Length: 315
Image 1 (tube, rainbow, N blue to C red):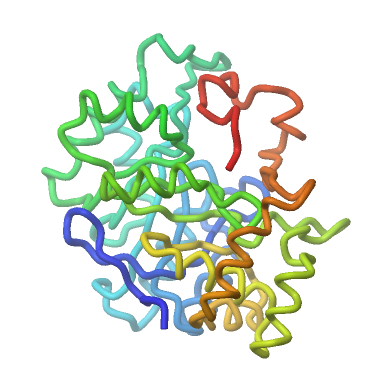
Image 2 (image 1 turned 45 degrees about the vertical axis):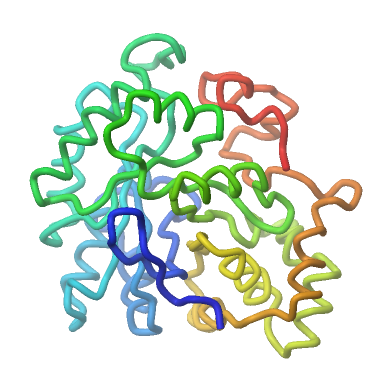
C-alpha cells in the first residue's frame, strides 16, 4: 500500500490525500457550501485540508474544523499567501490565522512567486522578489503559530534562485501534477532537495461542459476496470505511489470524496504505463486554465512570462 502519511523535511507529517477547498471561484467569508463540504470530508475520513487566502473561504474551513469532534492535532491545514501579501507577510499571515481560528496553521505557502501592488504585477527582478518574501515567511515559524512553510507553483529554476538565499528549505512545493503533466524534472529535483510535492488538479480540472480529459483517458479507465476502482482513485494512487507526493483533489460529492480516498498499490507494469501516458501525442498539457484561457498559447500567466515562471518546457 502507498503511504497514507509522509514526513516533511522538518519532521512534520502530512497526509497523502487531502481535500482541495477551491470552490471554482472566489467566495466570501463563512461560505456555507465550503463549510458543508469540509464537514462531509472530515466525516468521510479526510485529515488534510487545503485552502488559501485567495479562495475567500478560510473562515468556513476553520469553523468546520472547530465544529468537528476531531482533535486539532489530527487535522493538517494548509493555507496560502496571496499576490497582494508579498510586501506584508506578517500582516497577511495574521489575517489568515484569525480567519481560520484553529490554534495554529500547519503549512503556510507562498501561493505564487508573483507579487502584486494594487492593479500592477511586480516584475520578477523588482521588490518584493519571491526571495525577499521568503525571508519574511521564515520568521513565521519562530512564533509557534505556523508549523511549516513552503511554496506553490515554483519551477526548478525558481527554486534554485530561492535556495541561494534561503535559510529554511521549503517543506512543500504545491504544483499542478497528474498523468498528463507529471512534472518529471521537478519530481527529481525536489526529491534531491528533500522538498515534498503536493499535486493540485491531480485528476485534471473537470469542467461541466467537457468533463476532465484526464479521467477520460483510456489507459486510466482500463486500469480502473482491472482493479475495480474509479478512474480518479487510480490516478491518485499513481501520484502517491511515485513517492514524495501528496494530492489534494476537490470534490463536494460524498461518494466521490470516499472514492478518492481509496488509494492502493498498482502493479509495476501498470504504474509504468501510467507514467508514460503523457508521452502520447497531444496528452502532455497544463490542465488548469487559471481563469485566463490557454496560458501556453498566451505565453504568460499573472503578469509573468512563461520563461520567468520556468514553465516554458513541460515534462
